[in-house]
Length: 112
Length: 112
Image 1 (cartoon, helix red, strand yellow):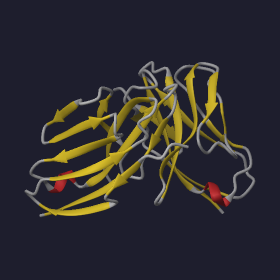
Image 2: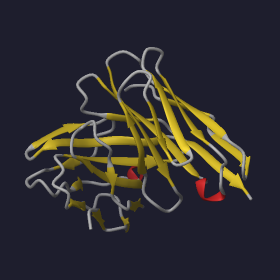
Image 3: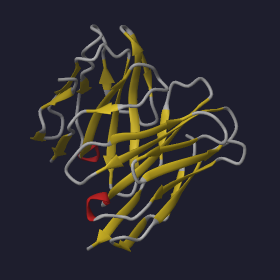
Image 4: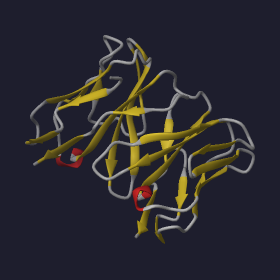
């Protein structure tokens, strides 16, 4: 089983603050890195799928970067809003690219 | 509407009573998988399927069976449920193994 680790485990920020969290994954045999947003009582929804070293993706106030050589990805949220409160999951796909391994997530709470 | 459906959404059962959780997708996705989510452990893959009649074990397959007789359906079978299978289960599908996963609404299973 691959080790995909996310930090911090949980985070509280004030509305309007910008924040970021980290996903680290094994860099050998890298294939793809996924980010998902998971709101309470809902299902995870895809934010980004990233494959290239140095890749940077953006969706509104949320962006992500990828470093496949050192095995990490950052997720950034600019100007956090209460509706950004959710658990953010990353998942790594490696080798034969058949199996996604998820991290345990970063739980973000944005306080009004 | 493109979606992944699961049934039932909630189930309380007793040890040893066989049960099936259905999963169906209407997006013509080739890749389907089952995950369980337990507190502090994140999403762990149980089984996955790359196409009809092609299934493989994920990280935690013990006590579960799956089948993929049709492209759209991927049922999860617990032949003899035990209390340690109490969990939140998600079915997911995607066009390819590397593609973003579309998750079903989840099935909360309690085994007493």
